[in-house]
Length: 356
Image 1 (tube, rainbow, N blue to C red):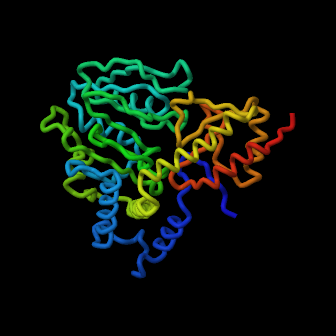
Image 2: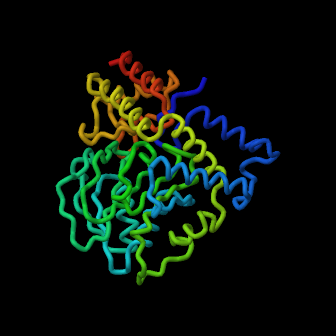
Image 3: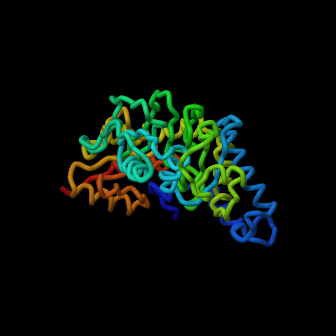
C-alpha cells in the first residue's frame, strides 16, 4: 500500500509522473537507452529542456525578456549567485527576516554585499510576516522568501516596492499565478512542486542584469553564461530535468497555475479548519500569514504529540513531524499531494483518542 507522504521535501509527486519517470529510466521512448544515459547535448535531450523551458514560459506567461535556466546547486547556491550577479562591490540589498530561509539568505548575501534587514519576526518565533518597515534608498533589490517551509508562513501579497524583488520560491513555485514583472530573479529547487531533487529552475529578468559592474563574477556563476548556453554550459542533471518536464506537463494538463492555486487553497482550508476546531491541536502561524502549502501545528501536550505521530504512522501517514526548531507537526501539501490524503489526515485528527 502506498503511503500518504506529507514530507516537506523531497516531496510526493503524482503517481503517473513517478511511473512515467520510472519507465524512461529503463527505456526512454523505446530508444533502447535510459533517459539517464542520453547526452545532455543530444537532440533528444535538447527537445526535453526546450519543452520544459517553454512550459514554464507558458504557465507563467513570461515576457520575452525573461530567461528560464536549469541549474544544479539547489536554491542555497542561488542565495549567493543572485547577489553576485545583481550587486556591485559597494551595493546593498534589503530583506525581511521571516524565518529559517531568510536567515540563510542574509548570511549568504553578507559575504558579498551590505544587507539591510528591514524587520524580523524572531521575537514572535517567526509566526508572522513583518509588514511595518521602511525600504532604504540605496537598496538595489528586496529579497523575499515567498514561503517559509519550516515556520509555515507565506507571502499572500508581495511587498509593493519600486525596486525589483528577488524571490526564493522553492516551496511555492508553480503553485499560483504571478505578476512576474515585479521580479528580477525567481529561483526554486526541486523536489516540492516540480521535478525531483537535483535541479533548480531560475527565472531571470534580463532587464535587471547590470550592463557593467565592478564585481568580477566567475564564469560558472554568471547568469549570462547559462543564458548564452541554454543551460548547457556544463552537464545539467538530465534525469531531474526530465522529471521536471513530466511535472510541467501534468500541471498544464490539470488546468495550470490557477487550478494549482485553487487546489492548494482547498487542501489547506480543509486542514486548518480541523486544526482550529479540534481542542487537541493548535496552529502555529497567525491566520493571515498561514502557508497554504506547509501547515504547521502542534498538539496541546508532548505526550499527545507522540501518540498522534504513532497514530499517523499506523495509518500510513508519514512525513508530518515538525522541524526541530519549531516542533509539533508540519503537513506539506504541494502540487503532487491529492486532497484525499488531506481528508485522511483530517479524519485521523477527528477520530484520535489519546491515552491521557
